[in-house]
Length: 419
Ligand code: 9WN
Image (cartoon, rainbow, N blue to C red; front, side, top):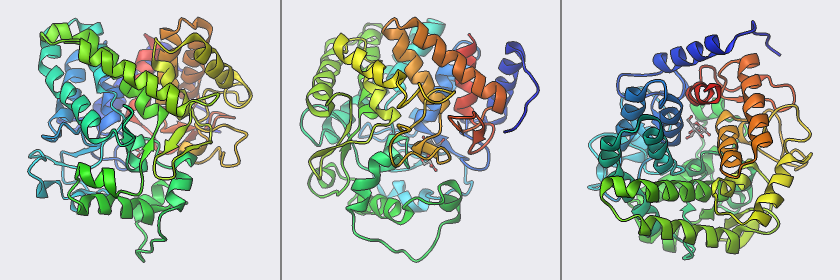
C-alpha cells in the first residue's frame, strides 16, 4: 500500500483544485488525462457539484459544455468528444454525424445516469444563480422527456439501460447474465484501450451491442422491439428520481410547472417498489423477465429519494451497514456485496470502493437524516483519498488506490466532503 505524506484539509483541497485545473481542457474537464481524454456525462455532473462552492464559473461551464452534446431527441450522450484525442470506442464507432438529431459536436450514441437535474439544483443551492437555472432548465426537461419517451421499455415508468456503459458501472456483475445470454461474438481483434482498462471483461459483446444499436439508427422502436439488452437498474432510476425532484423544485424559477416533474418522480418511486424490490432493490432484466439477484452498490440508488417509505429505508440501511457491505471492510462502500461469488476486490465495479457512489450514499444519508451514517461515509471516503490520493477507485479492505490517478470526480467530490 502506497504511503503518502500526511495532508491537512487545506492542502488536500488545494491538491483537488489543481487536479481539476490540470484536467480542464478549455472546453470541459476530462475524467483523467490519457485514459479518459474526453467529456463523460455523469463525471461532469459530479465535477460540477464538487466545484459549485469553489469555482461556480467552472461548475456552470462544465454542465453547459456537456449539454452542447445533447441530441435533438433530448438524449444526453455518455461521451462528448471535444478534441480529436484517440479513445476507443471513439467517433468512428458511434458515427453520431450520420444522424440529423445529433449536435455539431461528435458524441457517443448511448446515455448515462441522469444526474444533471440534481447537479443544476446543487449549483443553484450554492450560487443562488437563477439565470443559470433558466438557461439550463429546458435542456434537462428535454432529457427527462427523452428517457420517458424512448427508455420506458417496461412500460411502468422506469428508464431501461440498453448497454452496460449506460449504467456508469460497466463491469458490474449485475450485467453478467444478460451479456452471457447474447450470442458468442468473436471480432478476432483485441482492443488495447479496452483491454488495459478492463482486462477480463467481455469487450466483444460490449462492442457488438453498441454496433447493433448504431446500425439500427439509434431508433427508439428498435430498442423497444429488438434490442437484446434492456435492464431497469435501481441506481440509474434512483438518480433519475432525484433529478426529477430537483427539477420540480427548480421549475418555478424557470417559469415552468413543477407538477409533471413531481408526478414523474412519484411514478418512478412506485415502479421501483413494484418492480425492483424484493427485500432490497435489484435490477430487472426485461428480456429475461426476471430480477437479477446480485447485490451491488447500485441497489442503494433509490435511497436518494426522501419519499422512500421508512420500512424500505430501514431495510436497505441495515444491508448497507451489515457485513455484506460496510460492516466488514475498513472503508466505505464496496461496489459489490463482499459475500457474492462475483466479488473481486481488484476489479473496478466488482468490488472496489468509489468516491462517487460513497458521495451519493452520503447524500442519501443526509436526505433521511441519518447523521452517523453520513459522517461515517464522509470520514471513510476522506481517509481513502488522504491515504492513496485521487485514484479512480480503492481496495475496500486496505484502502490502496486502483485504476488511474488524478481522477476528476474523486478530486471534485473531495472538495464537497471537505466543506
Ligand atoms: C466507459 C469515465 C468513465 C465513467 C464510468 C467508468 C468508466 C468507461 C470505461 O469511466 O467507464 O464509459 O472505459 O470503463 O466505469 O463510470 O463514467 O470516468
